Length: 218
Length: 244
Image (cartoon, rainbow over all chains, first blue to last red; front, side):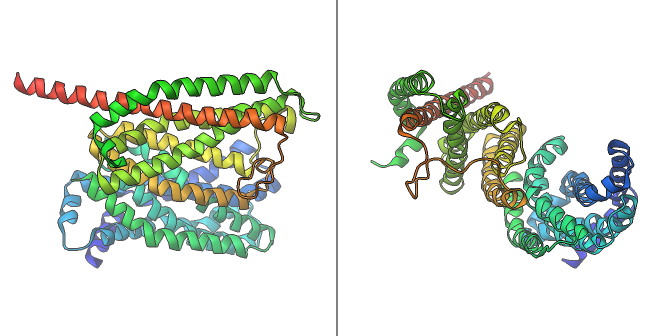
């Protein structure tokens, strides 16, 4: 299991693995927002939590189509299907590797990009916390989407259409935590809901992803 | 005699051919009478004026938009558990009908909302969840279209339907939390029975709802029949090619 995780991480970090891609995309989205809505710092500060959450979500989405497709192309996915390791564990590890290479850097980068968007002071902690709690769910749900579209040629666009509606609950509660944190309001309810969604998806989605992979690659 | 005998495509087609004329006729009658009664036979509301009459399209289509998804959910479960092809095909056949119902509900809602709320669209929980439902339908249909092997497509879309249902319910509560509503509560609460629609409006509305339900059934029967015949034609062609 650890070998598989290390392999995925190594592949992601090496040239062509697309490790920095999500991060660069996040930076670009955040840079483009002021051009689109104007440079008034008060306005930017108000929308910063939402923009940062949306940027992180899109950056997560960007690397999803490589998650399983590359393994399918070179045949290693077939090996994993027949491996003694249960497929549920394989997809969980894939999701974990995706989170470590995409979600975690986004969480760490978010405060710096928050500065660019003039995020109010108390917001930083809650932004990072909400992203750290929410992005694992994005990776796990994204793995399900990647498993659904792995047999489809040029499934990238289809993948976004399938995955984005599933991201709605996480986005709502995550951005709400960040927004309330920035405004200094009580945020216990959305925080707990966000954590609950993440725990639930981590517990249940690997079964769906594994089932889909088995059905799709018979 | 059980319902499972209709998993046989031939039996299903026979049944479908037998009930379809009645379904079409009763759907047409219910909708025509319901709409005519509703549009011309009921008075204007004292506050909403004649715009109240959009209810005869809006409520039935919204009802069927949700029920179509439920039907797809049940059909997907039957496919995953008992592997009856007809079941998978009914789910496939119901999706475009459901998406059109969702669209009708959204558009009629916007048309009503403009004079009444002063806006075409508001990020209200009900409106937002319907938009999300619309996206789910689109993703479901797109996945059916994208996969060539019909059995794999049926498998994957069924799982998507199951997972999507969970997330659709989750989104419903999430958006309720996220924004308080502009949309009025239900006028016909079945559980409590305390409806707030006057009888004049209520009877044609019920007729329209029944009519939309029958129309949905007729369309699903019709489209499933088309899918079965399409698959049969493909099989015949494949066999003919093999013999050449």
